[in-house]
Amino acid sequence: MKTFLIAIALLSLSLTNTVNGAEVPVPVPGSAHADACECARTGRMAHLGHNRGCYEGVGVASTRLGAIARCCYWNVRTPIEIACVQGRCGRWFAVVRYR
Image 1: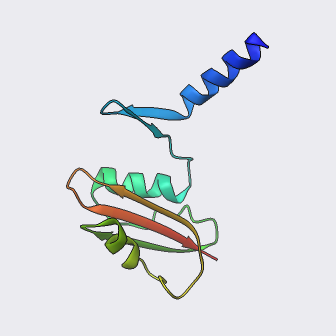
Image 2: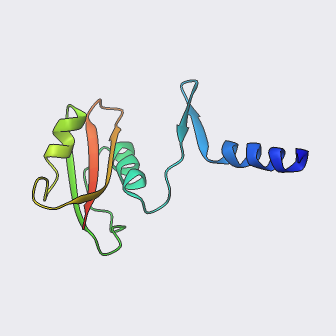
């Protein structure tokens, strides 16, 4: 039982990063969150090609909701994955994947 608990504790440590003293989830490669993180890191809004055959919209704005609302297909298609990350410049980068 003790080994099992240690394994779970190690797994939870590997799935988070610490940023400014707060734990944040590590993005799953190829996810909307990972793509939004990359856009925020580079400061460029772009389709990165990880959408796995889904429709994808990207947007950038000064607020989270504004960035999501500026994504292509917003209010047209059904979203299945939404991610929004703030870049160093203070702007929000959104990636939305749709059916």
